[in-house]
Each structure stands twice: as C-alpha cells, then as structure tokens.
Image 1 (tube, rainbow, N blue to C red):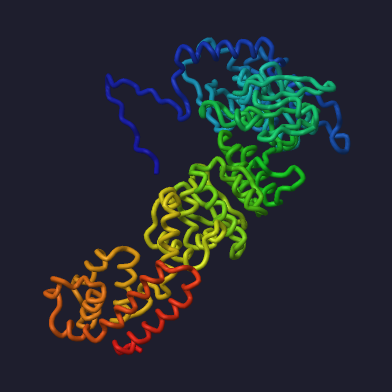
Image 2: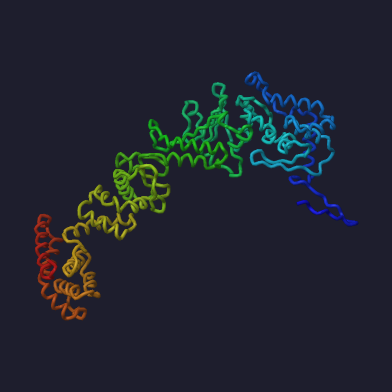
Length: 582
C-alpha cells in the first residue's frame, strides 16, 4: 500500500534521510578512507592479488582470476575518467569484481566523505566503505580496505568457489590458482601474528616452529612429542603446539587456527596442511595401539577445531578426554593408565590418591576384585570426587582426579568388601561380621582400619557363638539375642534392652528369663507382670545353661569350640521346645 502524500508547511525544516546500512563518517573514519582511496588511485595494481600460477585450465581455457585481472587492467587505464567509471560501475553485465573496482576508483575522486556504508561479516570482519555504483557491498568494502588482510579477499570469493586459492598476509596477496601451495612468507606471517611465542629451527632446509613446552630433540628423532598438535604443511614446513600453551592465554585472543583459516580463501585447511594430535596417557605402553574409536574421536575434535566451531582453549582437554573414554581395559587414575594384571600394579596406581597406606592397600584389593569380576554389557565404572559412581562406555575403571581412597572404598565396599577382607587374611564368619557391621553402620575408613584389630577380635568372639543376632524369632530368638549382647557388648546394655517396653507377654517372659539366668533380676520385678514372670520360670534353667555355654565358648581353648557349639545347639533345641517354637 502506497504511503499517503506528505504535506509540507511553510517554514518546515526538511528531514535528512539516511540509507539503511550507512552511518555518518566521523573524522577518523573519513581520514582513513581518504588515505586508503588515495593510495588505491595512485597504484591500483599494488592492491590486487598477484597471480603466481602460470598454467592453463582444462581444454586450454584461461583461468577466471586472470580474466578478471585483465578486465581490471582496462578499468585502471581509465582511472581518471570519472564519466567512463560512472557507466562501468552501473553496468548490468560484466565481471562483478570489475564493477565494484570501477565504483571504488570513482570514489577516489571525492574530496570529502560525510556518509559511509557499514559492512560486517562474521568471517571477513567489518569496515566502513564508500557506496558507489551497483557493485556488491562486500566487494566494495574489500577493495577499499585492502590493508585488512582478511577483508581484501572477499571480492574473490566466487573465484575461490571455482577452485582458485588465495593467500593474504601483511606483506603480500597472491593467487596460486588451483594449486593450494602457500608461500613461505604467508606461513611466517601467520606464525608471527599468532598468540603463541614460537621458536624456529631449520632441519634439512625445512623450517620447524615449536612452542616452549615442545622438546625439539624428539622432533629431530622422528618422535612427535606427547601432548602436542602437529601441523605438517604440504610445502614441507611443520609446526608444533604443546597442549600447555594451547590451554593458556587470554580467551579473547584470536585462535591460531582462525589466523590460518581466515587468511586464505577458500578457508579449507586440509588442502594445505595435515593436522594431527599426539597424546597418550602416562603409563600407556608404546607398543600398544590406542583403540580405533579413540583415534576417530580425536579426528572429530580436530575437524571441529578446523571448522572454527570449537574453542581452541579446550581442544587439548577434549583430546585427552576422548582418548581416556575409549580405553577398553586397565584402570585410569588421575588421567594415568595402569594395567590390572596384579595387585602390585593396582596398588601403585593409588600412590597419588589421598588416603593412608592402609586405605590404599585395602582399596587396591577392592579395585582388583571389582575389575576381575568383569562388567555387564561391557560398561565400566567411574568413581568421582563425591564418592559416587557412573558408567564408562568401555569395560575399564576410572578414578577421577580429586577422589580419595575413602571414596573408592565407600562405593565398592558392599559388593567387594568381603572379598577384600579375605585378601588381607580376614575370612569366614569373622570377615562376614566385620563386613556387615561396616556395611550397616559405616565409619570413615581411616577410623575403621585403625580399629580393625579390635573389630577382628570382636568379630572372632562373635563368630564363636553359632546363632547370630536376629537369626531366630519369638521368645527363643529374644533370649539368644540378649545372651549375645550381654556376652559381647556388656551386661548393662543387655539389661537396658531387657527392661525396656515389651510388645508381648512372650517377649517380656524371655527378658525376665535372661535376667534370672544372668542374675540381674534384683529390683527389676516392677517392669514385668505376674504372667510374664510365671512363664519365664519354666524357661530359666535352660536359659541359664545356654548362657553358661556361651560364656565357655568365649573363654575356652580352640580344641573345645566344636564340642561346646554342639552343646549350644542341644540347649537351644530344648529352649525351642519349652517356648513352643520347636
């Protein structure tokens, strides 16, 4: 719908209209444009790419860059003819670069610049330029801002799409035709402009650049340094960046890969350089190959970096993580790899993990037991700093940096603690007692191991009484539980339990029977009614014999244990009959 006609009133000031994508040129912008355009007019050829390739295209055709340069030569010959330039810059046909070039030369004749165009590109950068003619804005911006190493390549993007290669640096701008062979000066300029402080060494006429953390002697011996990125340029030079330097520096710094990619057109780095990463975890045998999945993962990371979609500062970390995540055997501790063929190997892996020597030894037994047990569906295990586990996609173990031996013991104790106790000489019922107590009421493992001797003694005594706490129910079970508690934990504790609230007459009778047998009934009658005391009278003698047998089990010689345990079961059977639970 057409806009209504505008009515002007006498004395009304006329409004200034500015085209979209333009801005008022401040003094600094106008001065810079004037300076650049003056240089462009004085020596136009100096700001165009030099054609280094002298070959012919298929079927003998002239390459597109040479055709365009010839067209530009015609325009240069008319650079002072503004009338001719006006026609050429508005031509509907012809080379689009030539059209923008004619418009730029026409702008060189302006005396002042008040309004300028604004150009901005994520890949090529931003700049101000003079709009003149019907040429593409990006082409005009690139031709007029020829001092911008990246932006001046923009007018040649269509030629790059047709297979031509361009390389731009502070001291030159060349086209190598379909041959992606950058000049040495281009590589040297990229190295100089990068955020890294490279050192240079020449070996057999080949230049090698490397960062501080790289051992250049290994390079000469043909061994790529561990923890490095290697750039092998197809013209013979090579460049090494250590992970240490890769991960340091200000995040605002332009990445090295961006310096490379954005100073050539097309920005396709694989055409001029092979990029490889070298990292093996400490402890990995040199003769052992990494899994193919690990190599594929590293290649994906390098591709993302080359494609400018990955932050340079995390490339080293991502490579390490990719390698570690793909390892299919052994144990990984603080990013170091260890074999799990023996206890000694696993024990050595824990040298740098927080914990006492006793904790490390027990944790090593537990880890080895876990590893030897195998992993369901080939899914491994990760232990983190919070004492939690998560799955690894490969059948291996990993302890994250910062996790302690206590974290390892805590998460694996329920499944492998009993087996680990056996490895340190605690077996049978004694081991089960210790394992169960730590499993049900866990203590810090440092404290647990310090008290292990007393725990072993207690567990040994507990194992002598063949009926376990809670094993039997009813009145008979309650009597046995009170006998065990009284013998192992003290008569006072058992007495407090016996005189507490009872859920039934049978439970009260069982408690009174134990009090009579243990001679702890004096003054406790008020806790029990007559029916409970009467019923307990029938159980008291057998309870007393069972209690006496328990006392003898804890103090007798080892050769009498079996006989006394048989005697225990005889009295227990009698008690079951008396309580009606046989």
